[in-house]
Image (cartoon, rainbow, N blue to C red; front, side, top):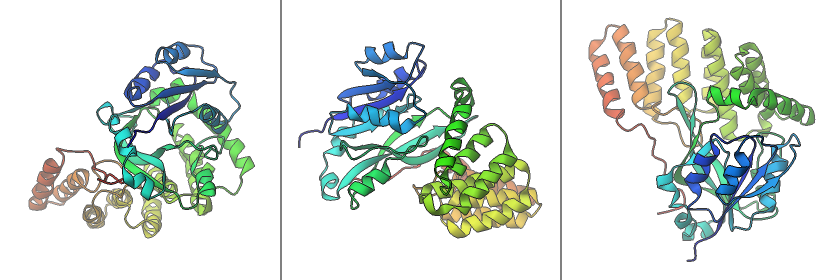
Length: 367
């Protein structure tokens, strides 16, 4: 079967630091590069042109969807891949992308979009894992909506209600949430302004309160963040399961940061009732019990997390929760309780599990 063509579509502004890495990671698998520049004053445009990109100058209109859709209008490939400049595909895995797209399963199951395995780097040594759509068939009816945290899935479902998405075991690394990059791009101020506009335009959509809560967390405005997370989880209608679970997790994390451990335990029970297979929630509840001096309850919650194993792919999760990190916490907890036998057992298990920290995802489009 002839391999399909792929268009890479991006929107950028002053991304000279990260853009070369991003484009280098996919230059061998894409057939064209289309970049909408919204007003760069550094070397972004010249870098893009050096990679052979078609650069379109466009004024910023306070809408990521407008800019992304403009790039899509220029795409000629069979599929459209979109990335941000602070993201890069694993170069050792990228070469498999076109071969995966030729598999019979793609056609037999009406697959219209592709999800990739994202590794999101945060401050310190932490990394969060999740799956995000970043490729769709090139169809004029597939377009983004929303000023910020733009979504393409609603337009896809409206056009083809029976369509499906496939997940590939190709990693994309995201560096934009590192503190220095948030400050560098003044992302917090820009994002808050766009989110407030979105709340005014869609007052019943709780997702924008979730996103506003995240921005308040970035600014260390924890009371304001908690207020918006409460509003978000009370308005679940507009959420996907993935996003709603993130809102619950973020509320618990905020309570932990604020030292409100009784509330943490209370709301974790509510969240676990909604998402009983979300391992990270059990970890957060254990943290609350531990801080309250309830060692046995903390150990019980941690053992539940271990019995569940890594969180299912649809959830945002920290690698090691459900495996080696959970065993390490159990080992520490048993040691503080004076149970050295159990402590040695779980610390040994943690060491054995920690050799491979990558969660292996299934290849959803067949073998």
